[in-house]
Image (tube, rainbow, N blue to C red):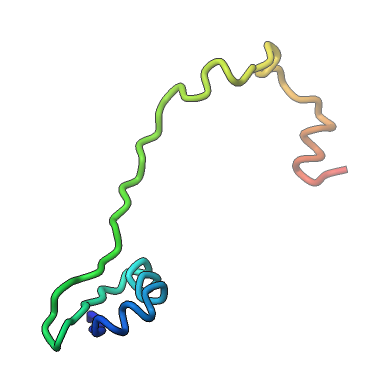
Length: 80
């Protein structure tokens, strides 16, 4: 349900009212008892992931796929 505030309250408490809208609550602003504006959050669309965005910035060593030493595997698994 929307919160209704008069124009004076909106001017006095704008930061709080914007925080309410950003949190997903609709705020209606009224002037002389008549609803004149609605404050709602902006819907943010997730940005698509760009494939190859790190190309040329990261160097993968030539031995990347070389099997790990058994002692390293044991350390990852919490074994002595």
